[in-house]
Image 1 (cartoon, one colour):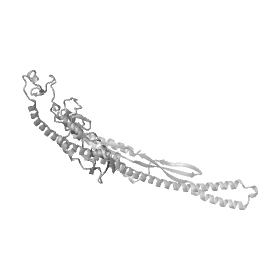
Image 2 (cartoon, one colour; image 1 turned 90 degrees about the vertical axis):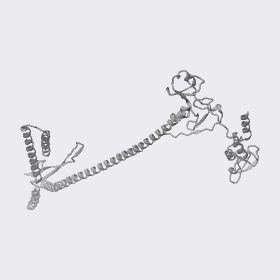
Image 3 (cartoon, one colour; image 1 turned 90 degrees about the horizontal axis):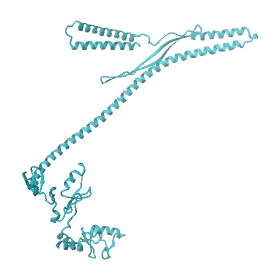
Image 4 (cartoon, one colour; image 1 turned 30 degrees about the horizontal axis):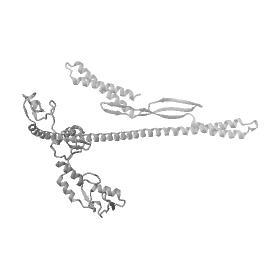
Length: 445
């Protein structure tokens, strides 16, 4: 009866005429009517074109907004006092999870838009959201009514019985009937006492979880640092490899340019000699053709002493040119490139760029009036002091290796006790012998 009077009082005195809900920050107008501040702000913004003059939503009186704006309307202290005496209107929402109408929802999950009771909130917090996600859960102020606060769990075996006891043997909450029947010989205790004792266990669990959080946080920090270090090392190493590859490419370009310059220099000398001889041969060819044409055009009446004198002078000049081109020897050098190979042995890269060899050829032209090809040709260069020294070093090194191999072979044959070092040494000298033979063979090709 008393609650009905309070509700009627709220509807008559504490209800805003705009939002039809209980006043929130009530402001009194010059016409003595009261409106919520937020409702008044919206009302003035939508109903007044100038923002300074509007009509009261109840009596339609013209009201001017103060200089400071709508917020300068004075608060209604009378309404505030009544609200303080009556208190805020209690909330009696039902839990959206268990939907028990006798259980009041005391929490609200903003992310899930659910009203949740104090028993379902724990499972919702632990399992319904991701671990790293921040969840907004608000506590709702509810009315202090006993019937709505009776939110104890019921027994699953005996319907209508509340769980008031705790079986220590089965580690489960039971009702009084269960204690007298199935748990008669078990160790039991009041559920309230068990819950109070469990608070200490929760504190211990809290301490353990805090320690675990600290430990995992330190490990995460160290692991992230390690990951960044590995990533930086990978990027730095990749950059170094690319720089080294560019340096090697530049070095290879340098070696290639040196070889190309060597080929150009040698070829230029050969071409200069060939071009010079070519011009001389062209001159002899032109003079010979000129003489042929002159003799073919002669008539019988053209024969005279002057003719013979001119032709003898022509033959003398032609003989001078012929002497410079007859039996002319031309030495040519044709370049050839033998590309090297890339080998990988025990993680080491062995790279040989290649060798430039000149194929030398001797050509004799205009020998006894005919063009005679080379009297001697070959791909090997004339022997010089470097070639001789290289040949002597090959011979001396091969003799030294073969001598060592023979000595080790004799020791292995005559020794009564053969150790591992002798066998390894003998195999090493065999390897050197075979390698030297292949190297010598390739150098003489």
